[in-house]
Image 1 (spheres, helix red, strand yellow):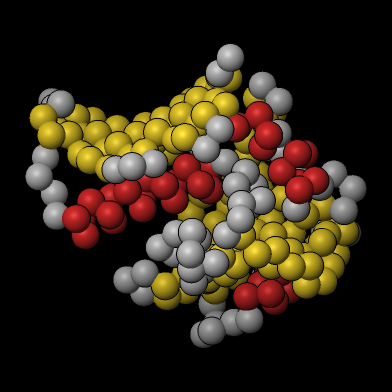
Image 2 (cartoon, rainbow, N blue to C red):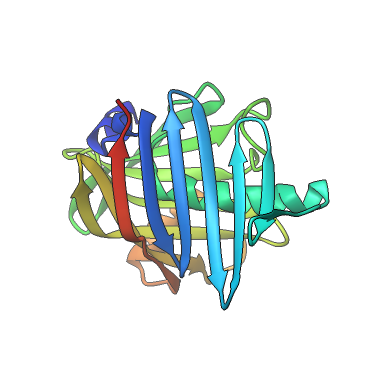
Length: 219
């Protein structure tokens, strides 16, 4: 996994700003050696809604006016912002102290060899979604993440399998989009989603596209 982080240029994100659009919404991520400041900006008609979160707090403004939001609701907004940025910058952050990584096997997908790495999280420091489990398929030669899968339980529970597409290099950092698949059978084994993918037994749910991506690095 450490080689994958380096192959993706993740070390460059330690002191960086990243801006991108996702599904018509603008995101900004600033990182400075553990300090972070994330924003999500949505504009519709004459209304601008901005959600901000950093190491200490999160808040929402509408047309620059601070809003009084219930803690549970604000936590949901912050989690949504964090999740989008988390996926956009993977595999950055998968070397954290609360991250458990385990080699669970290997797999040939489309005639290419992969390591299968299971990732789980410690409840202490692993975030509110620490019960989620991930599998990453890391190419044995390039060390790039070509596929990933995860289980989740929020309002409902399910599984997702993502296939990397439209990979590009920006300032030394690998940016990639994904075809996002969902399970078609009840409660599949997470580690076997690769075989379901190859057997054509996953359903394409959506496309994950990062647009207008800009990166800069702090001095």
